[in-house]
Length: 180
Image 1: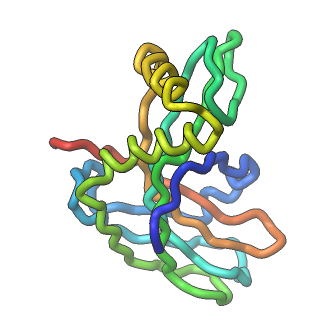
Image 2: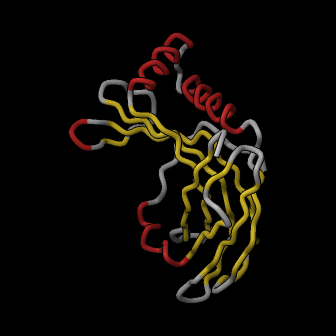
Image 3: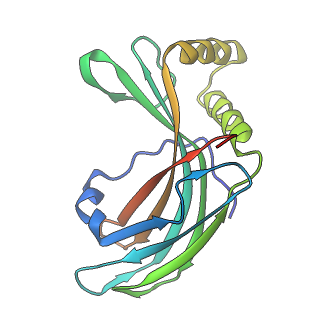
């Protein structure tokens, strides 16, 4: 599967109640581009559950806090401050297909691309263009973002896709930087 970019990522808030039924364990939590993320996804469901698929994904989110600019999907925060969340990287791999799931463990490995940090920034710029922003507007937004609170959060997310019900989802934040 290829990475998807430029979409807004807002998890289902109801999946919080099923978080303890799926667990993401990693061998370590700090990575550099080119390394391999190794870990396991463990299911601890309350009862056997028919599901469409089980996946694990590497996700990069750019989180922007600002007061006066609007550049995309908006979540209203405290004291009039807005928080906007953009998916700048999403690479998903299947761990299992349609089946009845209950108490299983699935090992996985995700290779982090060597150019992930540069391509994630480029993908964010493409997202702004996709929102109808001109190059001048993008340059203005980027300068405002450097003054506003902007950060990138990386995580590994496990998802059990349950048709017509709330998916079972949990994630583990990781650090992804040029140097450790």
